[in-house]
Image (cartoon, rainbow, N blue to C red; front, top):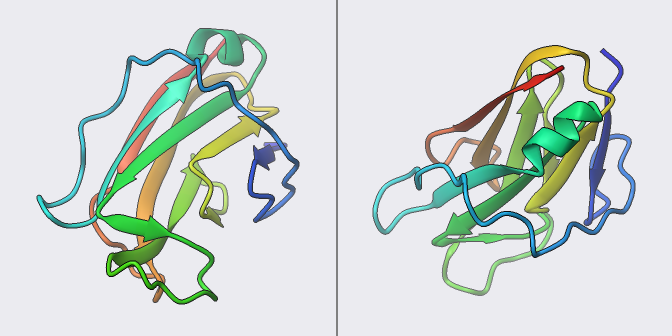
Length: 136
């Protein structure tokens, strides 16, 4: 599968700048994942039908009780620090602090994007969020 990934932060593999509209559909969030008071995560696909028709998928993530930052920086917020790990199907994961990411050149068929929080030690900080979709 040929795969291009775009983020606003410009971190990771084959990344280009992208700005996603904040006016995107406010529906379709997954339930919050993670313990109450601990690192939490939820995600959604943006522009799902339009993007799928163009062989793309845009993901938006929200986190709670954690500070996303460059792993080389020190957290002074008092919150746990971490990064996001995005993976589509069995492709290599993309590690970034960006809460918006777009996958492009996705082949036709069913796909799953998995998002999880990682601590600064690269260990998972809670459950994964899985977003399933189909590209025509």
